[in-house]
Structures are given as structure tokens and as C-alpha cells.
Image (cartoon, rainbow, N blue to C red; front, top):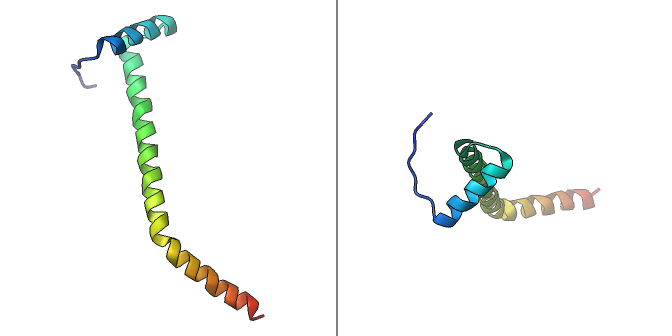
Length: 76
């Protein structure tokens, strides 16, 4: 486990203290879980962006293939 020193805005710290008391969690556990959730959120956001970009790159080719299949189906 890594040791980390960080500075939190006063409001963020106060909210964190309130939540850890209500949830009966250690501050360290709460912050670890929060960072883990935020990392997962950002990984998904980056993946969504990457998929959208790659989809846009392949959309023209996909449409061309679709038209070719339609021509084959119409030929029957």
C-alpha cells in the first residue's frame, strides 16, 4: 500500500468527514473507495469516447458493405 499526502478543499473535507461518520467508515477506506469509483467512471468514459471515434472511422466502410449485401439480396 502506498502512503499519500493530499490537500483537500475545506468543503470536500467537511463532506468527507460527515459521510464517513454516517457510514461508519474509516476516512482512508472511504477515500480509497471514492478514488476507485472515480477511476472506473473515467475508464468507462474513455472507452466510450474511443468506441465512438472508432465507430465513426468504420461507419463508411460498414455502409458500403451493407449496400453490397443489399445488392446481393436483390439479385436473388
